[in-house]
Image 1 (tube, rainbow, N blue to C red):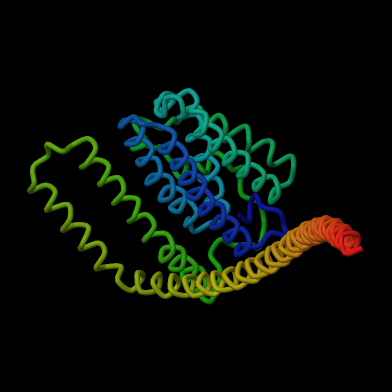
Image 2: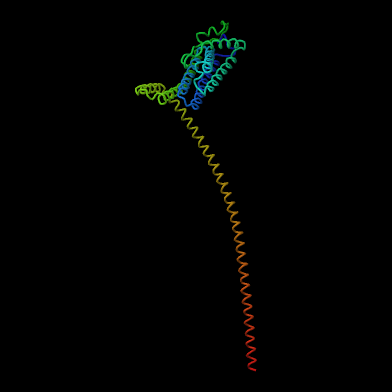
Length: 338
């Protein structure tokens, strides 16, 4: 690192960059594998995808743990280039069938990211020279098989880097720096190993229940014993994960309560609006019914008075006729008496 990196780039800084890139390396591959598995129904694609997922994180982590962070960055660079070539023109170019483009896009992005990192910690002229050497080395050292044989650049780093210059920066720092770096590595392992164990179980489950159901029961028992032994070794890590999970559940619970309260307020508001709307409709219907009743009542009253007048008229005519008849009768009696 003292030979190649810019003067203002420190060992802890570049080492942290390597660690962060290695973690992102595994995460991007894992995300791509999920997309590939969801979009495919072929057992061969599943098998190769799970193998890629388990291979990628450990390879990137191993490269980032190099004692010299600049050498670790070079190893990550060659790893990204080898991976990209493997899925574009190497043995893995047909590994994922119709989902091959997902793997290619991911590997191209990872190679682009590590090139940007390298260019940010090196002088432009040195970066151009080293970039040509890395590309040439990657072309001559492809991944063999299904990601199981990968030549590393550690043995050839001396050829990639020019002759040593004078400089006071050393790859090996103080004891305090070494302990800090060891603590960082333990933190990374604590975070990543349980996830990788889950990937191993997913791969095992897929292999047993999708492709190799005819395998002997004894092999299944032995495999489960191995998994139990592995989980026992990481009991402390699991406890930490459980604590983190409980905290996340508590936060999610509070978020759910807040969402329920907000939803309740919205429901009550909607009910109030609906109640007002219903009452308005009832008032409108009541007014309409009252108006109709008034019209009917007025019609009945008018009808009653018309009938009453007709009756009174008939009674009056009958009374007049009766009086006239009585007068006629009286007149005739008077005439008879005379």
